[in-house]
Length: 354
Ligand code: NAD
Image 1 (cartoon, rainbow, N blue to C red):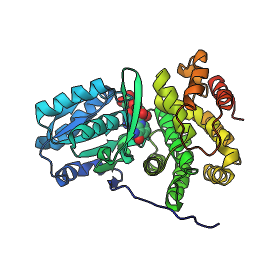
Image 2: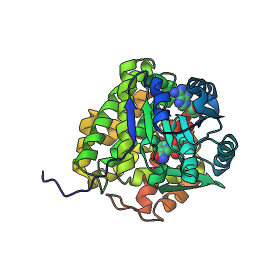
Image 3: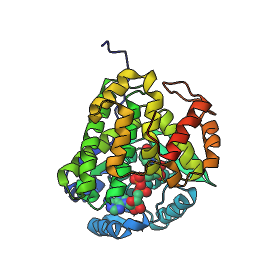
Image 4: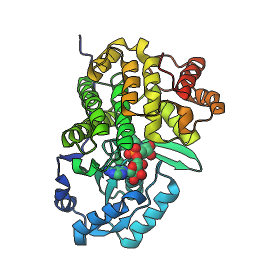
């Protein structure tokens, strides 16, 4: 195979990986040269965020535990008030994509340095992407201004992630890696990373669902999530991420579960246009057919396959298909509204991909 010319710009984020690596938090905050950080979390992880703030001692200005899904501007404004009130000059985000989103939204408006401790597999900490919502509308931007300075991947922080959330968040990461394999601006490095992410996640997630405390599987999944987040941050995504964005934003469906339910169908849609990429995907997933393999992976993980069970109204399917072809974006297979509607109908019913 000839290697085509390419451009690759590695992301500058410093990554610390390993069990117990949260012990390096104080040293890493000092390394950022900040005086006092605000520790961010969701309401559900407020207690653990408080423990981290205690671990930081004088380096912590306080906590803000109001992070929620889809980064609503209203919450960002509350957190910004807290930043100003406490005179925080740095951010520590403890949590999944929702908390990281809040941290990025604050950084965008203040330029404060960010240190992220991810506790799910969403991968947002490795991307220059920020999605925000206001008045029910989601907008996404790509800017290096939101890229965190430091990420500490401590696998021990994921041990409490419930099996169902681990599964859907893990398949969200699988989706990043899958679409990276046919990205128009992909390159040999992102392809290697994406393949390894798919291998690691598809092997580790079934073990995690059975044994949530298994340290090797948790480590493997976290490594996969890091690689998947890195490729999401480096190359352009296509139909799958576009549909997830449209459905998530318009019908307020749960992010990770939505990605997982859609993925077998979007890959089946694109497969004829990119046979070599889906062959790689199948190989990494250890299956003969990538789309069927992804559908089976969801079943093994106990993931809900039907969009209707996630709250998608049947009456919204036509609107979703129309929205998905509205603003043009790069995709290997041609975007046809009728074919997309058929895809969405199958995903809505939870049928296998075609
Ligand atoms: P999340 O951050 O909302 O977390 C899901 C739930 O799990 C929350 O209730 C949280 O409190 C809980 N939780 C998280 N970690 C836990 C742990 N270790 N133990 C126990 N409970 C835990 O969900 P998510 O899937 O990580 O993130 C979804 C959000 O991230 C969406 O808003 C999505 O748009 C965004 N996202 C952004 C990017 C990007 O690059 N910008 C990438 C992926 C996802």
